Length: 90
Image (cartoon, rainbow, N blue to C red; front, side, top):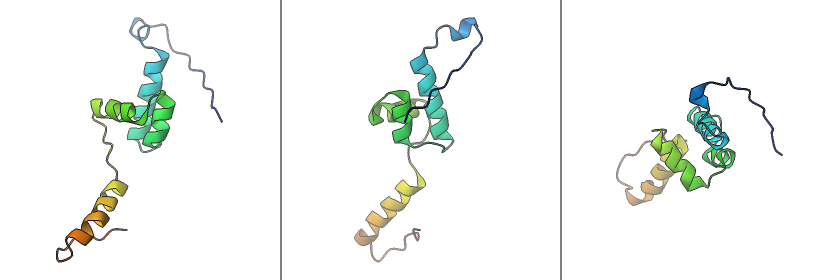
């Protein structure tokens, strides 16, 4: 399924140098930063591969590390440090 969106912007000099690809990337980054779409969906929206999208997020100082990533790492570390007290994962 493809969603088509028409966006009418003012004919301002500052916007004349912004391409459709730039707008798609900025929108994808903003939606990901708000937690509204995943990295995979953002990459698809921006027309980039996942690694290029992650780079774009990093350039904008948008974290690509999630709470789920933290829980996965804690679960992976638990067997390596059985005597240590680690936070309880969900």
